[in-house]
Amino acid sequence: MTENSLFPAPPLAEQERMVEAMLFASPAPLTLRELEARMPHGCDVAEALAFLRRHYVGRGVNLVRVGDAWAFRTAPDLGFLMSHEVVEQKKLSRAAIETLAIVAYHQPVTRAEIEEIRGVAVSRGTVDQLLELDWIRFGRRRMSPGRPVTFVVTENFLDHFGLETARDLPGLKELRQAGLLDNRPMPGAEPEDEEAVGQSEMFEE
Image: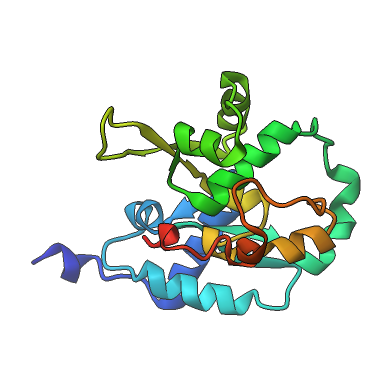
């Protein structure tokens, strides 16, 4: 007899419980492949995730996608209840904020392109800080002279800001209304093009 007949996949409800348990216990988001590797043979993890996500709609915690991974997160409207547990982080320098914004809205982007947009050199310390925070990472090398390395945002960055993908980044108008940016033009953006930032083909997978 084959493995399939000896060990049939558990019912979908049981698969949901398994996925729920793994995501609840994991300190980091888990990808579909990571979940499948731990599940019994024949399970439909994607379907289990879909049912589980619907089950948690409107509850105190939600099942959310973080890049290519999945995790449980506090419902956005209840975040204020956790405010006393938030550890205050050291504020990023303006150079780091500008560099992070350029990577997020123009990725994949090289150091030279960041410097061209900002109009000043990017210090190694600024890039190292963002790498240490795991908010940016090295991307693919460009097929151009010198094969320069590119930078892209990480799943940790998406998770921190509650985004599924970089396409969900807010527009500059929303950032300013939230007090996250001042009224100065974003580095490298023309005034008439600011609201188009983040919509370029660079975000295509």
